[in-house]
Length: 451
Ligand code: AMP
Ligand code: ZN
Image (cartoon, rainbow, N blue to C red; front, side, top):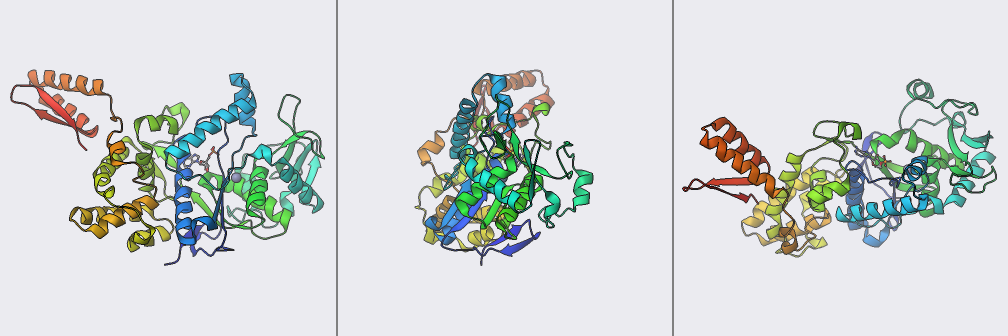
């Protein structure tokens, strides 16, 4: 089966036909580097890494170019650097280093290129000049703005009319804007803000412009796939399309637009104010990156995902069961299972691909060597089974030993007081933590980790 991808542009699954199979090109919006990335940000990282791996499998590793930018100029960066009393460079370097380490720990391959916005200012200025020359932009009060009404197709990705957007958007009212939806391409910088000389004075780019410039430089005027989270459809991706199409005179920037759904935590929106905000960095202290990755892939990328401890535990147990078998076999491209590949080629259906892994594990347990080789090979394509069995099993325990012992002690006391409800409740709590209890004849209780 040929690869099918759901295209936000057409709102349907389409067969993927690259412009040039000798160089399949994908751009994904990367992080703004001012703080630790959170577990929601891990979703596009992992999802598009799987797509990158699948494209490499189909077209050959050397025939796929994957660009993920680093936004290192942004007002959030300026504010955070000032707050912390560090230089912008220090902040972006430090945050980027953490991000790179996070991505690696999550088992993501390095993209072909990770351009930084500040190293591509000349291309941004060139795009603004083209837009001005073509009447798609206008200078105003030290700014340059994109003239939205100059582009009749504006809104085609998000499928909103201009009137709806104006009604629905919290549009920034600025006296220098001619139209309410016009957005900033270039803005002036105060002396203490980062800035670059330009025909419009010293200033800095708007966020949307960064991606138009970097994708152009690395992938050309029109490329195959553009990805990001669903929140980026409007305005970010709509504005990227407006800039790139108007500057280069094509009616497409990318042919396929892919968006991952949002992640929430234990049924609630993740927010610092709700106290359920999890950084990738923190999550990696509790769970192997591979467990986080596997847990993420159990949900189809376009669906919302509910991130729960129970889900992570189950993912850990499942990998624990598979590892000893999978590591007995060598992974090979030639040994990918047809139903596994069919699932991935159906708009990256990783839940179905994982169902195929479960079947392979079952068969491999019954001594079918072919299934074992397939399990290893398919797992490898998803970025699983990367550790040696020894390293996997030596992973730190996922719970606080002292807490377990305190709970066991409380349970013994409850039993002594014949409070069976409480003693059962504690047993269940421990069970949910993956701890199995064994009551001994001498009145003591021992425990073990359920692997
Ligand atoms: P940001 O740093 O907010 O621009 O986000 C970086 C990437 O993570 C973008 O592709 C976002 O769409 C994506 N993203 C942000 N929050 C979430 C979330 N809760 N769930 C899934 N993706 C997210
Ligand atoms: Zn972008």
